[in-house]
Length: 138
Image (cartoon, rainbow, N blue to C red; front, side):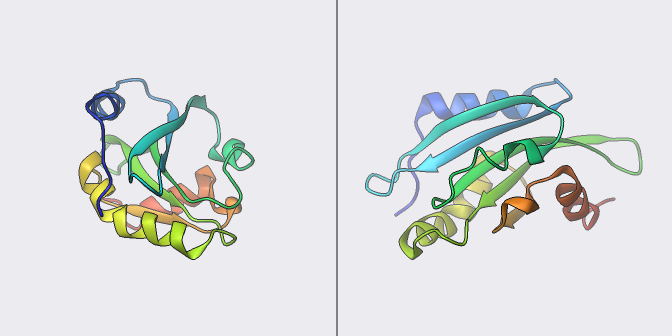
């Protein structure tokens, strides 16, 4: 069963993707395991380093994070969005399955090209994202 996204949430995601503020911001989404409704759990703006969010993420439940990360390409262009799948090692298999099966759908819905799966809170840092993005650098 695919995730269900409300019109209101769809508009919020579009607004987030088109924003022109050049800081690190994060939208945290959860999927209701019964209805498969996608909902916004939290929004964080003007973040210095993504490691600030390590303690904010739930320890036993996966989440989708849509990160607007300032990334400068070698030709001077800047890009921002990145989908990040938080899947803690302590999460039950059913929860992990719900997020994993909807990962591609979410990726297509928000319109990003790459997904980084994070299984450890230590992986949520600017350095980790920069290392991941450098693999795709133009």
